[in-house]
Image (cartoon, helix red, strand yellow):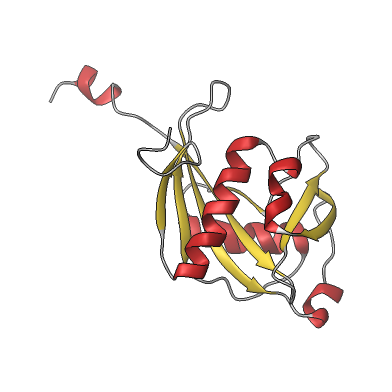
Length: 158
């Protein structure tokens, strides 16, 4: 293989986040300080780090807590015209009890607020691709599955 062929390979950036739930089954949505759109806790994978490790680190940095992070719910291939090639991972953060929620702090000032919302409301709260990803992740969690998406959609549903 020539050097030119190697340069033709995709070099995707990766990000990982966690879905957290309250006792009523509502999902945690956060408000980042650096953008107007809401999000889920998480961020980009750093060199030498796995997506799972990035998720654990980002949750600790953004929320100041270290709850157990569970299994992978979604892998989403979601290239963006600005950010480039992206692969986005969503892990199951599970249920956050009152004691854990009392420990939440915005230590790195990346997050300014959080709230729990019914899954049916995410379409009005999140950008479309993330709303689809969150909805698919919740469904995967309920079915005990992991799903592959492209732009937040299962294959064949574009």
